[in-house]
Image 1: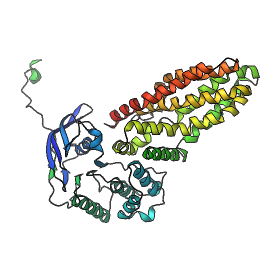
Image 2: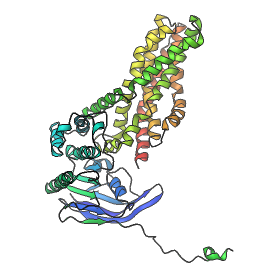
Image 3: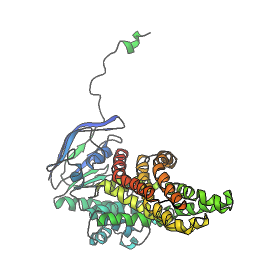
Length: 220
Length: 221
């Protein structure tokens, strides 16, 4: 299944964030979203995760349209945002197991996910005692538990060390090699192969600001 | 279904941890009732007369105490975003979280109420009505409260705003619940008041999940 964005636009708090975004991501590809801070990368990922309704345009995953079949669209999506969705009072294993049962994943996936991110030795430690990087790894481990087609990753490598960054890059490559899709907002080069790059630019005014006699001083 | 049960289990476990606020509501409920005889005086007649009302008012306030964290904790750590992606409807998630809230506030309050009733000089034969009214009335507190909690989820210190929003909506439950206890005290058949208490809860169960999830969707955007 391909991901297709058609003229997608987003407004948040009454302000346009981006508009007219068209893009195509084919099965087995990972795309990098690039652009300066505040250009709307996170907003785009939240729109595609169905958390923010698009202002206009459409996103399609296969024949699922976001605006018409949001629930079904959302069930094909795994989203890892800036927040790791971790309960500090629970151990790492309990955190992941809670998500596994909510997402209907079999219990074996939890151990596998912990292993992939080398979190096994910490499995019985409360998440409150973990470092920022360890929490991030746990947040990303949820992707493996959820088993979804489209991964939406918002700066997945923030606070990760070089080795863990490599793990994340490998997992994304592995995910797309099995027919998955990934859309990654990142400022570093993860080496995701020949996937397309989605370059986002700040909004330009849609029409030139005309010389206004009133504003030019005629009012005085 | 098992996914929702897992969510209930997780929320109950979190509420019972330190800082989860689960036992705070019950402790508050007990303390308020213990204070009443100290303030009003130990005279049995007076206490008896106000017992139903005081117990119900204390229950409303105690339920409010832990409501502000119902969705806020999940909102702040990003869990709410993930809950929206889960293969269960957000309305079901709201229902599961309300059930978990009731299990840690309404249920223990109901169970301890007979003891507190005796402290307020309620005759033993009225205690079953007190317990039953709380058992069928307190779920409405969690459900209606969930709507308020969903609306104020993004507000810092939203607990104060939440109480102002939610307390007026608790009035029907308060009136019918306290009325049932009073009627039992006067040896009048409390069936009608109990039926209305239950009706408020059923209505809340039918409407609150939709209202709360609509508010959560707006706040997530």
